[in-house]
Length: 528
Picture 1 (cartoon, rainbow, N blue to C red):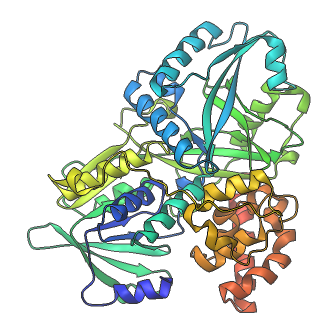
Picture 2 (cartoon, rainbow, N blue to C red; picture 1 turned 60 degrees about the vertical axis):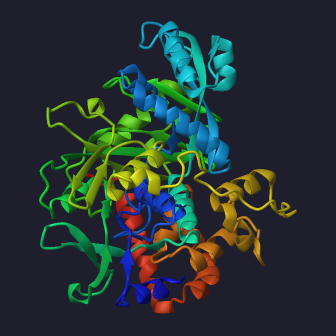
Picture 3 (cartoon, rainbow, N blue to C red; picture 1 turned 135 degrees about the horizontal axis):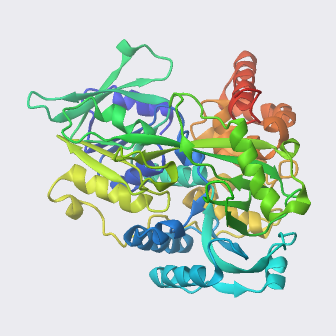
């Protein structure tokens, strides 16, 4: 169904849903996928773009969290590594294994024996064995240019990497194929309740329309999966257990792979604050991440990196690869995301806050926040079981059913490289055949992104603004200098007709996008 068809259906008098999910990030998309596949009448609403918030700005890691294991959160680590294995098996090309190298230096924590012992437990929880201890010379082979001063060797292990925005988009596409109605740029303006105070619906407002034009839909229950905004939506009801969200910002730098050529993730404990940080290959670039500090800004504005964070992240490269002599002038782009951490308010340092999710029940409003990208499926199912009541687990499909529908067994087009075809199967799953129909498989400039992907996004993935296309449906705006400004004329020729935008509309979107890029994805201006 097109966006217009969905909105028209919602305006009909007899529209009722088993569940309305508010929030189009990873948790909301996962809940929509599970609900629709279980035969529930499902509506998903996102006030901005799908994955606009934390779920397109994470560190892209699908991992169990070694540091959570080290801090005693064994259950969280166990669940995460098992979900990691499941995703790699179900969605290759979307979630792929990534080797990690943790170098060990004389006098620095952690030492090789302690870290190998931790990895032994990590592998046991996952049911696989991937750890290996490297000599100094082997460490250099895995990570050429690695600092040799005091190097004792390294530990090698495996986690996984994804494109988080595409992961969300794949879940939404599969939920839609199973009957869910999913809309971006539509806000849940108000949760409605009956005389007993129980939730009975939502008033929604599409972007650009006045509040009085709100559309009322009926629902048995509402899942509040709005991440960092979860406490605000929860406050609309008579909550006896309010969520307390501590927004924590994590920022990243993107540099040319040629300036820092890593083929695996290389990690260390930062000399300032002793937090785990890393350099890893992603989308043809190298990423340095991440920070972890309180975010005092408005959650409705794009979070931005500051100069202190830039210096902090450049030190990662300075300590790991001193010969690279990386500077701020090498940075292609940045991104910053806000983690919706549920806090107990005890004034802990940001990196010591608990990363486990929390769930609240408020007479039909189920609010969930926190947790990890990796465990989205478990969090989504827990929220749905709470929403459906005592028989919730019986109304959901079996827990061992696959999340992802495999793509059809299509022959690889001769113009498409093997690695690109592997990625396409993971990104688009059962929609791959439709994407390939009469498609242009030409690669865009020096990327492995195809023109077919942009054209498909314009036709089928609810592109409402230009940044949806260049920052989330694809990552061209992050991996090309100046937000891919030089590509805009070619993109206009291909995409404007498919979007149905006039020349004036296109120009407004270009101005909006470039301003947004400069404000939130470029290096910070002085004083920020």
